[in-house]
Length: 75
Image (tube, rainbow, N blue to C red; front, side, top):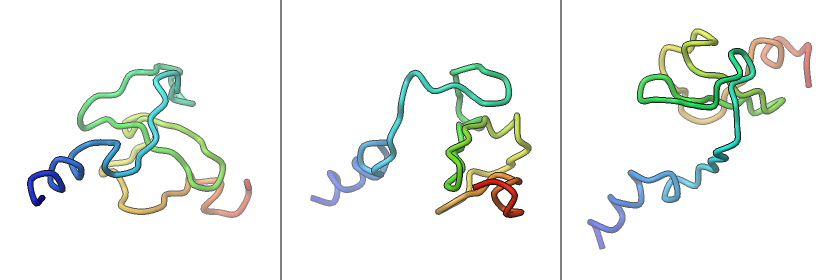
């Protein structure tokens, strides 16, 4: 049981993360991501960006808002 739970935590399905293979970065328009440069989605407007394209050093835990949504100028 413990091993199955650990495996589930390590997978996108286990974390409940939706992943669409057709999604592209809204900055560079490239669909690929790699470890250390993941795609991050804004919880306000669903903007999708690579960490490097938006200056995100670490993938945030929980919700994340892009700069316009965080400032309340988009929504």
